[in-house]
Length: 321
Ligand code: AHR
Image 1 (cartoon, rainbow, N blue to C red):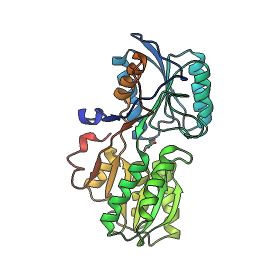
Image 2: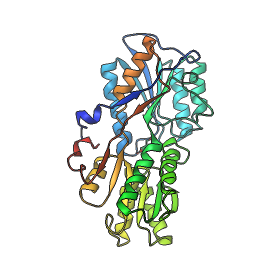
Image 3: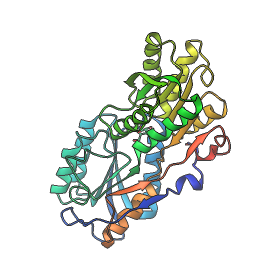
Image 4: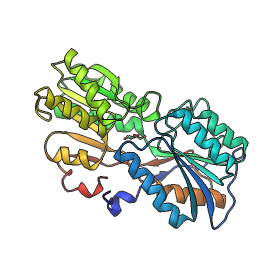
């Protein structure tokens, strides 16, 4: 596994106004903690980089980490959190696979008096709230990521195109919000149309298969917007297998900033990717320490993301993971 550069590790988190945490469980100030980290799956470089960031920070943050991998199952992730509750961890760090199914896990932790910090993905805001049911959500602005990908595509195509959209995991906050940000932007341009939109579950081979099928119905597609780099790389393989030249016949834009995506941009096969930083370790440690001290924590600790296209992909290769 390649090591990310120092700049990639240094997440920029913009802290807004803090909120009162009157109802949510507290965290005592201690030198060491038993911390549960409930990961969703480990099927792509983004997930592996996120897990590694948490494992690395555990050493310097005084965390004895209880790590679980839900293997792509929301039901297993709920069971993983229940097991952490039974093990009486001090804090649960949860990357909820989907917005709704993880609500019961958050509520059970609250009932057991264990604070939960959500990282990377959020839960349904109509069903649970920061400062009440969990401490805070640390993560990117997924709507803005979709909007930035759309803005780049509008410029790159002169506002014309037949677009295939490869969606992430159905029911997950990045899939819902990356779709909204992109679709809303594209709807403002009469020459652009999303001709098909289907889930590739954030996975490379699923993205390839879905693209292969959609190409049969839409052979005249001119652009692909994938909700993550893994599906974009899969789509590029499907385009090439169909005799098309990605980057020329079909423009590809996506989100994440993986090493493979930066390489594809430098090679001219992919147009651009909006970074979605997976390096949550340092900001999660910092947030937990502040929470234990009694500092006010904002409802959303927002992570700022970079942007890569042919102007900076080669020079930014060390950011990739
Ligand atoms: O929640 C973040 C998304 O989940 C990343 O874009 C994707 O690669 C991962 O699986």
